[in-house]
Amino acid sequence: MAEVTMTRRSRITPEREAELYDAVLDLLREVGYDGLTMDAVAARTRSSKATLYRQWGSKPRLVVEALRIQKSEGFDVIDTGTLRGDFHAMIDRGDDCQMEQDSALIRGMATAVHADPDLLRVFRERIIEPELAELDMVVQRAVARGEVRADNPAVDYVLHMMLGAFVARTLIDDRPPNQAYLRDYIDAVILPALDV
Amino acid sequence: MAEVTMTRRSRITPEREAELYDAVLDLLREVGYDGLTMDAVAARTRSSKATLYRQWGSKPRLVVEALRIQKSEGFDVIDTGTLRGDFHAMIDRGDDCQMEQDSALIRGMATAVHADPDLLRVFRERIIEPELAELDMVVQRAVARGEVRADNPAVDYVLHMMLGAFVARTLIDDRPPNQAYLRDYIDAVILPALDV
Image 1 (spheres, each protein chain N blue to C red):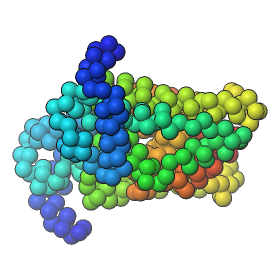
Image 2 (cartoon, rainbow over the protein chains, first blue to last red):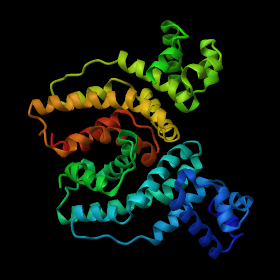
Image 3 (cartoon, each protein chain N blue to C red):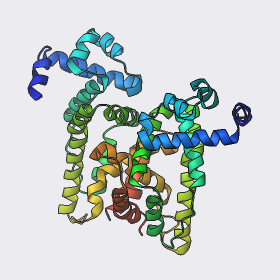
């Protein structure tokens, strides 16, 4: 599977690929996940829709790849010395506008991955697993410092709590999650569940 | 607005309406929210699609109304004497199959309500607000018993935690939430956050 992808991808240069991902991220910032169309990506990057579909197959796939690149580039190792400091720093890394986009993206993905198991695999590998790895690193440092008990059962649910806070905000309160809400949720729910 | 709806609804009898909702709930159980089509509802109930669209406007609206009826009928007042007992009893009210449907429903709704603010209002009034009211009743009894401090900040996030656990399961673990998972989440996250 990886080999097939490599062959398919080799039709455009890495520089061109980077340009395309930048354009996708710009469009995401401008119009959000729901508003982003393959037509707009094609127009912005002066490529044909046929090329985009040949390379990435679908809008969700293209967006996942673009986000993966952004994620690996913007990855600053967070280590403030406390679990609360680390969690808040993760929230403060973005801004409210980016959070609104992420919220639309998760909503779009939740539907798209359901209809496409292969996309779900890519989404898990590229987005969920790196998130889990980063959260796990942050929590394991807290365990090593003695802030969190290693056998606290909430340790296995940190990403569930974070992602759940995100999604629930829109459905329950009819507004996108923002930094103030997520900081409050961390202090009210996540840290107490971890007995910090 | 309410008046308009009443007038529109009065074209079919209450008995016929109840039959239609039962058929929708049967189909939800059989094929899930994603698989449910207006064609199938029309065929099952020997009505025309035109009638269904005239009465309910769209699939999500019809499903919301059917669920509201089910909810108000199946509402047993839960009062086990402890918060943990009450939360577990709420989970045990359904079964794993129903939870899988609820999960598909929330996923479908999260997308549908985004494109339709009027549907979001109906969804909030019919589904979210009764859920909030029931959870609030359960939590306020725990406060009155002295199990939960009234000023515990997690009190405002009980539905966020529940709904979040639900949605996160599918995206993170790639499987629908079931009763064992939700009971574990209640014990590992929700009760500790409430300091119970």
